[in-house]
Image (cartoon, rainbow, N blue to C red; front, side):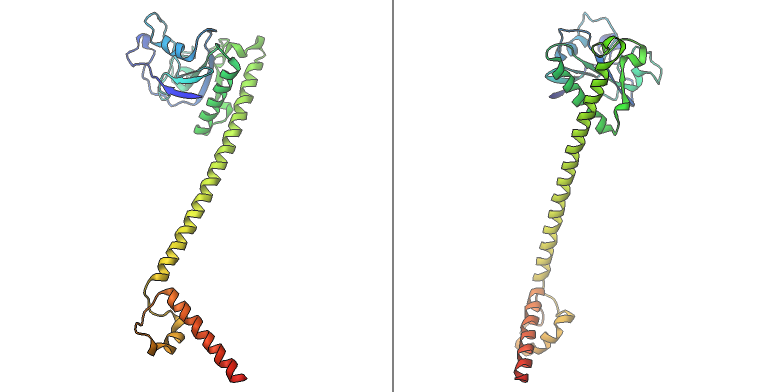
Length: 248
């Protein structure tokens, strides 16, 4: 699903974008109440000169896309519960779910988006609200089911499902990144050892005996780590051969 920003201007009539700062604590779900309107249509309605209502929302979702209409750190007028600091209007991100087109696909798009938003904020589904929870309005109306709210329960389950899938995906990505980092570190260590092996150094303690033995044959008193290693191996082979010859 495509997610795009199309913020309404701050000069939009009826104070639809008041610009009041908001630190959201919940996400509120709505239905648009318009069975023939797409996300694009709903975004357009917010800046339609014929619209004389103050009501606004942060995001609207349909079967094809999600449009962010108001920044998520500003309030929107959607909850119908006034403007005090603890109101839904001042503390909750409003998501409108379109009723047009393939509604089940729209629901899945909304659930996927909500799951992503919850995970990004470290929230669980207990942070989700219905419009009904703020002002008693029967909204999201297509989830009401005569007061049983079976559609709401189903939507919560869908969000949980997407949350789990996203967590699994994140875990796979993290593990993949860790493996990649380990390989990088191993390659760097290998390269460091190679560079160490090429550096000219005095004979290490474990190579001094071999260095003394070959001193007259060596024009350079320094050598690489690998040089001293090979020289020591050669020296020890000579010692072994000498001992074997001496005992035969």
